Structures are given as C-alpha cells and as structure tokens.
Image (tube, rainbow, N blue to C red; front, side):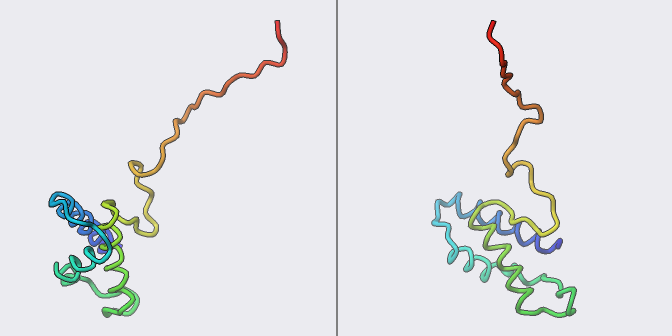
Length: 103
C-alpha cells in the first residue's frame, strides 16, 4: 500500500510539472510520463506472489496515471478519505424551528 501511495504522489508531482508548463494533461500524456520516468524501477514485489505480476504493475501504473490526470493522489484502499477533498458539513448545522401556532 505504501508503494501505491508513493506512485500516486509521483503522479501528482507530474501533474504539477505539466500544469506549470501549460501542457495538455490527459491519460496518454500521463502514461507516457509514467513509462519514461522509470517510476516502476523501484517497485517492490507483489506481496501475494513475491514477484512482479502484470496485475501489480498495472495497479501501480493506474495509481500514477489517475493521480497525474486529476492532480490529486488516488486513494489507497483502506485509507481514510482526505478531508481536504471531501465535502465538509458543519457539525452543528442550524435547524430552522417550525412553530405550529401563530400568536
């Protein structure tokens, strides 16, 4: 899970770089950035198989690309949502009072 977070953060960094260059940010561009960056060079082995399966490689790439496109890190399963990206609802929302009688 830590490596998926790392991959997502690298995607966000790539988004920021592309944005600062006023480059078009789309899936194809982010995939090329992933392939050219060597982002998978330090990929740990899949915990279930102990190797580098195509499914694991695809998942790492997905986290990078999705984060690169959106500019926000793709949430890792099991993580709590980022409060800065979720809608906020005040804990004490005033409730209008309804009076049944008129004086």
